[in-house]
Image 1 (cartoon, rainbow, N blue to C red):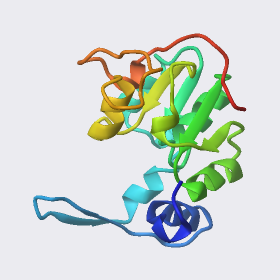
Image 2 (image 1 turned 60 degrees about the horizontal axis):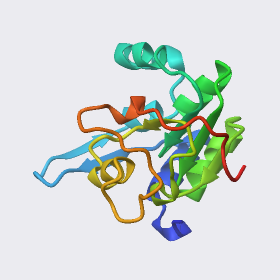
Image 3 (image 1 turned 120 degrees about the vertical axis):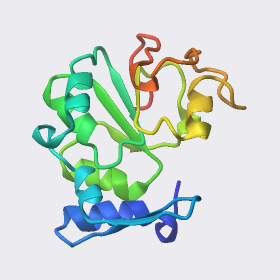
Image 4 (image 1 turned 180 degrees about the horizontal axis):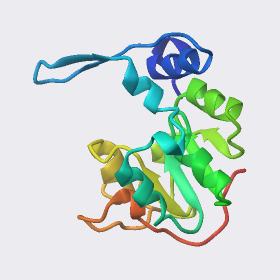
Length: 168
């Protein structure tokens, strides 16, 4: 779990939710520096403001959903509204607080390394995160209980076992 002084993203979402102006600065290792005022707002976007691809993908969701790195909770909240059994996890305590303030019923501070195969359909929002992807595919140390998700399968559509949520 992050300490408050480490949780820049959590502070960004909390401040944005509370009405403050927020600018996110993305700095890539190729030297690009990209400040954005619109990107942080997207983390809290309603379904009507999603991209067409995301809207289409939402129609394929079935069963229970584990939203790993749930951020502002936009996916979890949308799916909850549609009647899905959703659990959002994030390792940022402030992100989890924002999700609860927005009305997400099932959300907890949890690291991806604490995820196992008992938790339903996987909705992993950052396929570029190699550590997270490797863990979900059972390639990392400590991922023994995970379902093996084959290479080439989008993690947002990876289905695991049908057992109930653990630790609610």
